[in-house]
Image (cartoon, rainbow, N blue to C red; front, side, top):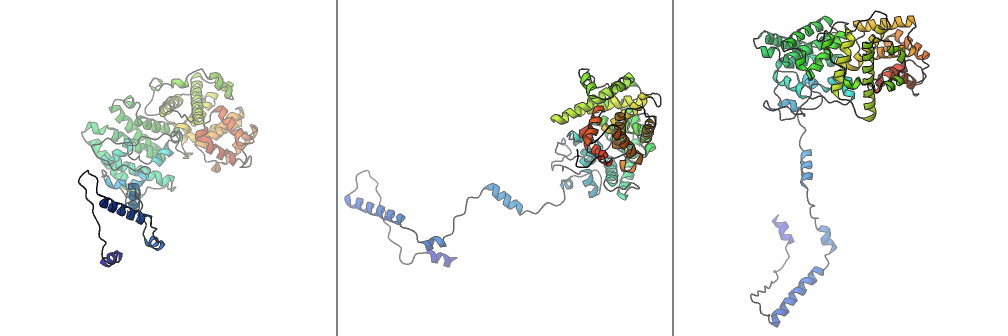
Length: 495
């Protein structure tokens, strides 16, 4: 380094530098003025002197100014990627396999600021958002994002909830993604046993508040939903009977009005009642049922609805209560369709209100077997189940109601008295709700028959007929097209 410095120094003695100091305001003498001018001219000539090209070539350029942002980005790129996830910073109420935790929290990750004394923020993770999209397709279709706070934090503080949720999510992914329906995985079975043991201990304790807490209700509800999902009818009903007792101890179902827990209870209750053709657990008499939404009872659009609906004379012949339920559900579909066209989707509260008011009434209505009222009640019940309760693309063809529905369709076809447009609607709703069309030869045969009678030449023809009765493209466009293309009525490239 010293040699490098010496090489840059000029050889020979340093030149003498003169300093001129003046401390008064009087005019300097001529000799001094001449010396000042000499120094000024000497500096000016040095500045004007050109620097040799060789000197420029050997000189290094000055470094450019560095922005702090660029420095941060450059340094951050050299930092290794993180190991693990934000879940590593959370201490759960019990041990759960990392793979199951990822399934339970697949989606947004929780923030670091997870402290027992803080209120959860909207940034915390939801329990399996993928599962939520499958379980309630209509809510996902309107762009609704569930609040994750009520689902994640019980996993941290309640070991029984953690184990039962792990059991339910593992079974869900095994059946939906891997197609394993025969047996539980060892991990799921272990979590089920732990969860049931902790639940029994809680119910045997003398802590009345904990026995009827939201956490306990949520555990029993998960058990009922999972049993129903697995086709275990009797087990699911036993869980719902236990849930009803707990809810009664809390003061009745009205205590939960307007809560997410109330919606989940109703959906499970209604789904079991519809598919197994049994009485629901939480509503027994019409006075207890929710009123129809006022927005769907308005008569201002009756003429418009009648003009757009085929088979209007048929609807006017129905029992008044059934006709009202039909009109309310049709107005609901028109409202959803209008919202999809204008990007102004309906609010979740209207969906929940319509679901409760329509489905509970349809279940409790009773008409003569084979009558027009009974047949259209079954059709409206199937469609309402499809809109509000059916899990996406999951069909329970072996349950009691789908078997009954197929029998009614075949009887209507044999009688040949129902308008072909209505029959086509019955068949498409059955295909979307209960039956895998490729496995049901009778369904394809009947669809072809009534599509031909309705002079269906394209998907638009079929969709127009479905819309004239009751149809929701936002929810059913893809499935409906799939049914149409199975009929080979036209080339796939034709609309």
